[in-house]
Image (cartoon, rainbow, N blue to C red; front, side, top):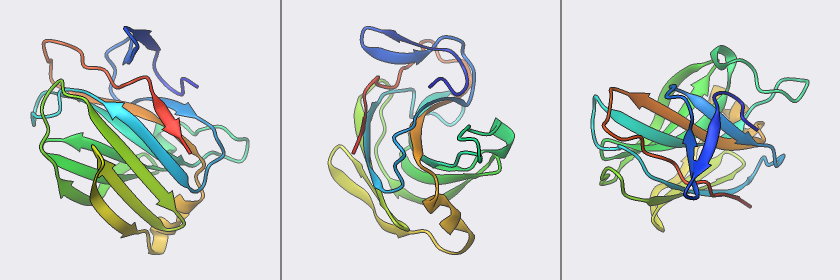
Length: 173
């Protein structure tokens, strides 16, 4: 579901038609615990100019089964940016980091990012190497155990010479 933005596919790669920050593509497998994997590629190694696809999960829907407007969304995400794997939360549209791990990032290189989430525990792998081990959601962050939708979000800043694309393949188990 194109939750925001217009998405397309070229050469088996997913991309955003308009160059807009924070666009979201989601799938609703009704999955509270599970495993997701995506191949991500982007301009990942610059503090000022980047195109960073983020793997989103546990996206919380409203009582009608819809995803709220961007300013009131709640979900978790993992992204690679500036030599860091970052597990983040979006709380009522405001984003902050939960934990990070060091990861070499190179622009235009494919990385396989995998996330296992079960109960209040989260594990993250990059290219089959575990980089975030058994992170535990506690306190007010336990609300993220309720979200059941997954997706990909594209973040950007600056003006890179080429648009980078996340992979079209989002595997959900």
